[in-house]
Amino acid sequence: MSQKMERKPRFLCLHGMRTSAKIFEEQIFKRWPETILENIDLVFIDAPFPSHDKPTIKGFVGVDDLFDPPYYDWFQFDQEFMEYKNLEECLHYIEDCMLKLGHFDGLMGFSQGAILSATLPALQTKGLALKKVPQIKNVIIIGGATFLCPIMAEKAHPPGKNMCNSLHFLGETDVLKERGIKLLESFVNPYAIHHPRGHTVPRLDEKGLLIMQEFLQKIQEEEEEEGLKLSR
Image (cartoon, rainbow, N blue to C red; front, side, top):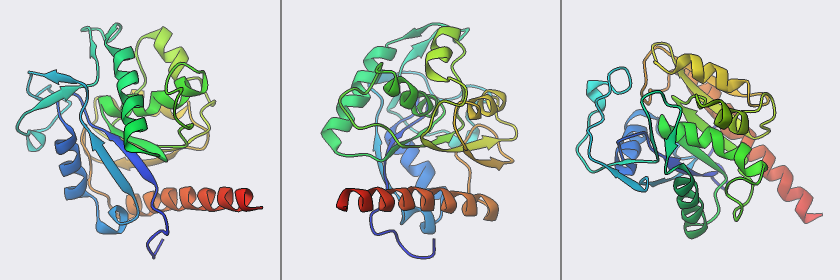
């Protein structure tokens, strides 16, 4: 992918728990190279629920990732991560944003936003979410994981059933690493970038850069193929 794409794939970006669209945007644009950023259109939105807690959960956010408020959450959960509050409202909010902001080729999320991004394609296929927007075809999952609640996991992560293109960032010391690896089983032919850091948005090394370029190239080729079919 040595040249700019004719039409850049457009992703709706969902930030992590107790952070914001501004924080996620800063993380991405400070750490990813221009060769990637010039070939992808990223739209960042805040989660619907204000959070009054600072993002300092041990093992989840490093000191270099602390930012000033305001902070937001997509939904809330109990200490065992088994019960969720405001999840349905969150799904409606994301759908409304997609309707208002135009066509999207995919979702990109970090942490709690990554869990949602990985979950929504399957829920949409089953008619349980995003009924008013086109089917999600691509997801970028940074520090993602499966839902722990068995009922939710069964709906959101059916093994080998998710046909959308997926790129997963897996940190060697990420507290969610095992659940992130488990998440790969839900997707058909997932791409994976492994990095040595923890639960964070990582910089791309040479290998990671090549994998991400290949992923974006695949999206472009599929779009071109679909365009040819429609023109016949």
